[in-house]
Image 1: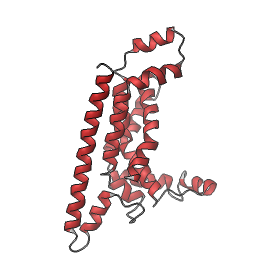
Image 2: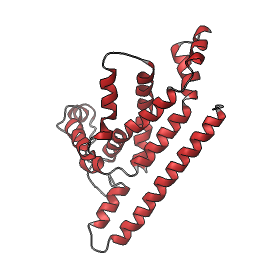
Image 3: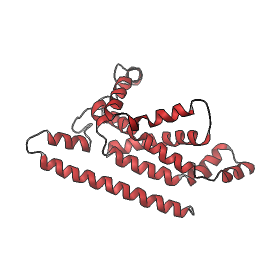
Image 4: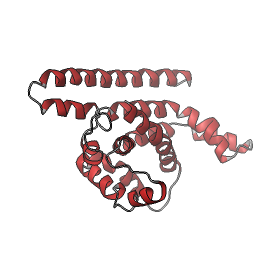
Length: 215
């Protein structure tokens, strides 16, 4: 759960920024940026994990710099597991936030602009509060999705008990040992319950926020 919380905590602010750019601006390369953001949705998770390993590994272009300059290693660590989860769920967060941003009435932003509100004032006082249902739902769904992520995590962060072992990896490990079926079944029920709770909470929270905003 800590891995999932960190993934959403670091990924959601960036997802809001990217969603805002995609929803509000037209520029050369916008389609390419949109495609890159959604790439993890169509790539096999193992391929995504392998790309992370190439980029953020000890000898990768980014990983080597992080290790040399800051002594930070992401590969085979819980932080790396969070990075893998964040990358895999990033498209979910961006899409949810972007759809919510596109429902915000541009007239409200224009009215605030005519009253002298700057771009950041409009963003933080009008746009983001009105888009809060999508932001909240995106974060909750991403968190629930992180709890089920397997391929990218095991490829980039490995399956280290007490360090990078997430719930799906624990289920996988239990199935590899004789007599581990019961433990795997118990963990699967926990995974099912957490996923269902996450989806129900996201649905409830979205409806409550929309009702509060008069939608």
